[in-house]
Amino acid sequence: MSPLWRNLNHARTGANWALSFLTTEVRGMQAAAYILALSSLTSSILALLRDRLLAHLFGAGPQLDMYYAAFRIPDAVFIGIGALVSAYMLIPEIARRDEEAQKKYLDTVVVGYSVLVAIVAGGGGGGAAAAAPAILHKFFPLLAAGSLTDLVFLSRILLLQAVFLGFSNIAAAITQYKHRYTLYAISPIVYNLGIMFGALALYPHYGLPGLIWGVVIGAGLHFSIQVPSIWSDGFFRHLPRFTEARAFLDTIRLSLPRALALSMNQLAFFGLLALAGSLSVGSISIFMFAYNLQAVPLSIIGASYATAAFPTLAYAFSRGESLEYLAQVAIAARQILFWSLPVIALTIVLRAHVVRAVLGTGAFDWTDTRLTAAALALFVVSLAAQGLTLLLLRALYAAGKTAIPFIVSGVTAALTLTLGVWLLAIFSGEATTNFIEAFLRVQDVPGAEVLALAIAYSISSLVGASVLSLYFAGHFGQFFFEVGRSWWQALTAALAAGIASYATLYIIGDLTLSTTFGEIVLKGGGAGLAGCAAAALTYYALDNREFAENAAALRKRIWRDAEPVVSAEQSA
Image (cartoon, rainbow, N blue to C red; front, side, top):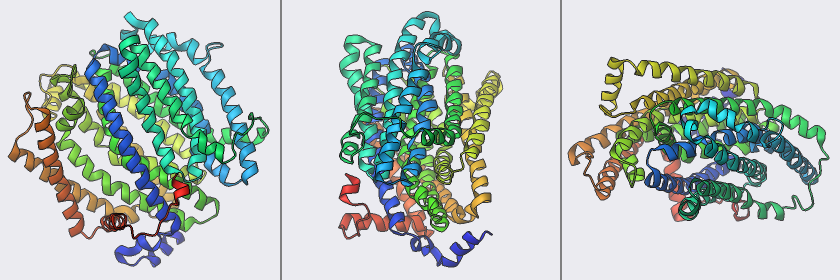
């Protein structure tokens, strides 16, 4: 056992061990996580309304397939270039500088990013805009066969989204460094409002280009909403100048492994969608609908804790406070497991209710519902793994270790694509297909091959999280020892939640084709509440420390007797 973890064990007194390390910074991380989770919930509700609107307008059909395919090149540009100036790379650099040096450094970053994105996204010299026809024809031949010109046009418009989101990355570094988590969390909310504006106001007049322009408007709002507070801090009061060339090159050098790692993930996702594009019409839409649904709890739980933890982790590690760094990683990991595992069980049991309640309208029919529900169950299996991956990646970036995330991402991406191709071949076998379709209750539903891609994604996510956890435990101490008890308690609570919700559905009746929206909400809500109650009782019976901490935090917030951990100015 490493000396650091030995010191942690000496400081622990039973279930109250974690509380002894809840310093002001740790409590601030927890408060920030609650703020981000609440804002993520709001943003997720809007995202669900956005997807419901898209499902109502298009169903899982060719137009929506084209919409999602048009994002692939712009997303690749954003991931590749935007990651070079991401908050996770900029915050440690900002933390090392005084106020005037911060302004000069960020001025340089803005100028450098502008030049890079103009070169990569531009239409000349082999930029993304110029290369779009060849790339889209290669990866989406069925879509491109009759609509290549339209697909290229939509993709080129979306390049503006990538530009705005890159600038928003730079703004987010300042926003998070100043602990304005509420403002930072509002950004995705206005982004989804922009998309909905495009669907409701622009699409009826301009078709798919109008919907795409709504996305660009949302990206512009994502960036611009952060500008006033940054301006008030004294940043960018003049035309930015490129004065810190060496610092910018150092940032690019340090960011490159992360940018490449994210590019590997984007390439794998691109590949899965290309495979979906080779299947029956609507497969891309089914894949994306299910992926977006599972992204809701991921953003509320995993992303909230990982984002809230990062500034404090970077601060602690840069000052050599390794004990606090390790303690906070363990606390955040336990919280992710505490929430994620019961959510996995509830989502698997209530998958059809979730899909039908969110997307079951207009052109989105019963066949689309069954396929999306099955894909959602397969995606959500890896929810906790994805959350831990977000946390551990940020922990490693805070420690300046960027090579390992790149290696793991590369291996995971290769595994994802390999599994995708292999599982599609397996799905072509009648016996295997019949077994899987029966297990997921999609017998005789055309297009079930797309489920192979969801399986590939979840398996690779589980493998990636396992490798990162093993590395972190081996390099920093007994990580598994510190989260092991919480893991099996969360697993027990998840089993209780799943059994309770399934039993409730058995009693009150499951969905049928004729089930109304009100019945869906009542049945699904009743089963979900039963599952939540079972999970809470299980945690209480097991004397779970995270349950006690969250219950205490909730009581303090309700009765307003807690010592404030994030000032009004910081959370503004």
